[in-house]
Length: 116
Image (cartoon, rainbow, N blue to C red; front, top):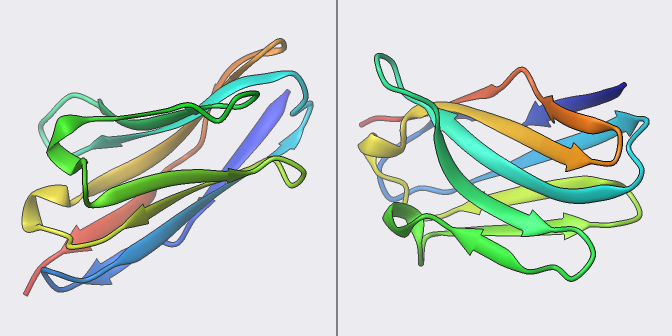
């Protein structure tokens, strides 16, 4: 099993920044990719950003492109989401996801609230 622990969420005013961290532990080897997703109240969970573990290739959804950046620390099995110029519509629970040779896993999420 793999355990994913997100951190870094909180309350921020519009235009502010937050950095989310997701630490993978347990059988966190043979990682194919890690990604971030979010879910606002009353909506489906949506993809935000992903990173291929071996080559570092990234994919970011259009609504956050230019504002959010995904990065990783391969040795620590950690993925980050730097979120800048936050907007009220970014308010959601942010979830980390890992796909690897042992399976697919979700974290429990961290709340991000953007409000004045």
